Image (cartoon, rainbow, N blue to C red; front, top):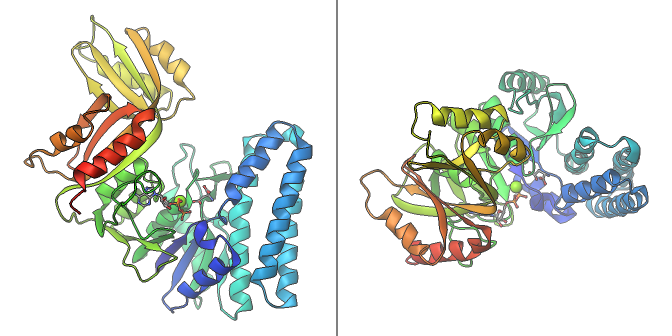
Length: 439
Ligand code: ADP
Ligand code: ASP
Ligand code: MG
């Protein structure tokens, strides 16, 4: 079994949907995981914002415009009157449902149900396109098997049991289509795996069915050594280890959802990143093997807040750090980077909904300083302890930029630095110039 995930741009218009259909023709059994068509999830977020603001008038105008766009997709995608009609009925059923949401009863639960429509529509369009072109396939509803637990973690046992049961209902089928991103939570409500979560769905599904390979098809030819949105002349990387890819994804490489490597890594399933627009390009292979040495890639994660606790009395006292960490734990907030000195400890977080509570709890241990709008720059590579000069190369590249924190040595494949977000683009470019100029 192979899992193939196609992102929003890959199914972003009728022509792309047809092209994806041609990439899944071989007889090898496969589960195809689709995102919503590009822009749709953003549009549904916007629709939800109108409802939150109790602006039903604009909400309605907005959703009707989106409905007309989808009518056009249906008209271009399907060729026969029969399937055009099926397409219109499909679009109407989703948009009538969207229209039913009421501004007076709109909470985050309703919003999740609104956001789910994007993937439900794209998968149904692909399913009917395959049917119209005479292909046998089954549309597997992700809401029947994809579930997160009370801690928002995938409920792997439930997922494995249920997806395998669903698959076993169709022993002769070798092409399954399902939705990325969407799931149910521990209470059975519609939920999701956070923005960009279709990659995570593919990896979770791949692990649940023990697939031979998980392929992530997107709009670029693989993992690049820097963020192509901010740096020109980035280069594709042929091979990354799970550890390297996980660090880069977690620290901001948008090509992969932050936690999407873990399920594949747990089951040692290779992940291949491929370009839908250039299917013959080899892409990037991610496996348990490290290959090559030295610094390989850079990523940046924005929206970071740093918190420094300064205390001349207790910092080195036994148990002090444990107490500090317990405060973060009690507010279910994870720490990304940490640096300590004799009299202070600095930590970074990317989730700030409990910042006030954390701050006031920490104040009983010392003076607390909070700085927002920070960025973690993460440099990844194979840097065994003996390798010399790597940290120097990174700091040399950043010598014009004020660095607030450095983390080095916690793993063999990561150097991270914290800088103010205003310096991010300069830092990424300077790192590319210094580290990869000979490539
Ligand atoms: P999809 O909709 O297929 O999930 P995404 O937009 O989520 O696609 O991810 C692909 C995009 O990630 C690329 O178009 C690119 O701009 C961006 N990106 C950021 N960092 C990297 C990187 N290191 N390598 C490749 N792409 C990256
Ligand atoms: N459609 C969702 C999003 O835009 C999930 C995804 O594309 O991976 O975030
Ligand atoms: Mg994505």
